[in-house]
Image 1: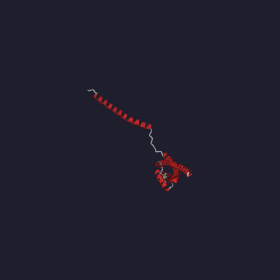
Image 2: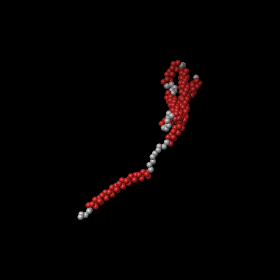
Image 3: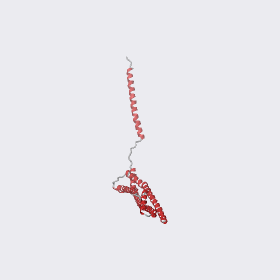
Image 4: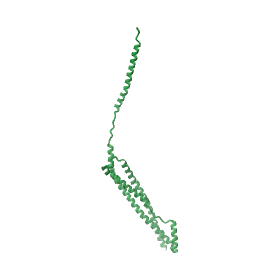
Length: 232
């Protein structure tokens, strides 16, 4: 009897360790999702938005469509697929089995007392705890394997999306360099010529003023000479 109790205690401890390991694996999966989102998906989305918004060519022309628009569009679709997989893995695909609550264990203990002999109650109760651990570990392990496979799939799709971004980048760089070479003609006015014209325009009013002044002086002098004529 004591040997059976010791064996059950040992099996329960092993199951408990396995249960904790599966919980740690679930946390690691969350960390991987955040890592892929931060290092691969978010920069790729930002780069695609930048490429589309600053592209200097014609998106629907045959050449640009084949070497820029199509690869960039495929990359965007792949990123959306990767995001949907990660969202499903993070939320909808994360249903784990928990251990029985104390109230459930109490109910199970009462059932054991009714259906078992007094000397077998302790062993039956330990068997129930061990079975609960085994079921939870098996179920959670299968969930973690499925989630891990989905995360790996999303990572591979993200890498494939980066490849299509790399395919579309050379034409973007070429179009950007070609647009910078187009120089807008600018008419340059010589500062020296402008200053000479300005000084010439400024001298014209001065000359006009001087001639007007001379005419006034000559007119006044002529009038004075008339007034100073002696009478006979």
